[in-house]
Image 1 (tube, one colour):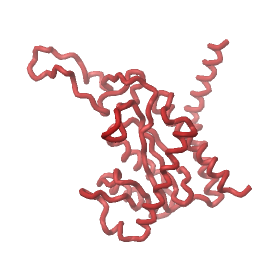
Image 2: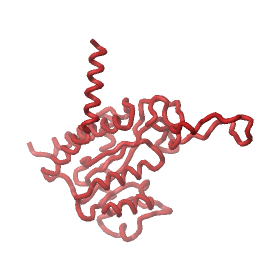
Image 3: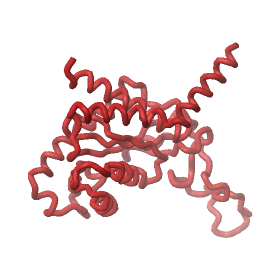
Length: 257
């Protein structure tokens, strides 16, 4: 009886994935906000965070040939084995989860990269995407979210922290039709006075702080401090459901009875 119930639950979960229900649910909350004129079509913010995965910290190479045994008698072979990185090694129990850390002062843990695009008016989540950390996922996912803004204002603005002050992101955002209002680095900045001199830049820097609430709510309320699902597709769906729930909570407060 229990086995049959578990099989049915797994089938239902797979139907949710196959039908892309989570993304459609999130899109419906965004459409509801737009219909109520609560959603900005011109000003947005983007950011990403690592979500700890419920996976083993034992890792293995993601490429089958990466750790192929080599004759130990050959010169140049390290006794410590091959070098490991988030680009080459994944968790044994969840290969999509990669060992990563949020800062230099924290431990490396199996994790997923979760990025969100938020409107600056009320801090509603417009879209989200989950991927495997690889050193470039944060910027690549942000550009992917911006390309999904096709049909918004002719020149939307997007606020972001210093981590996005790179040539790849700045040029990619402009190619996507967005003005990159990213915080400036002290050295090697990619944005210049053409962007930072405008009053709208300072406004974007203040408004982008709303995104911290977006990350805090799924962690403390939706139970996503550590995701218990495996595989990028499933984790992406769970995060999208959490984002949709966040929008519903915000809409309940913003929309008249």
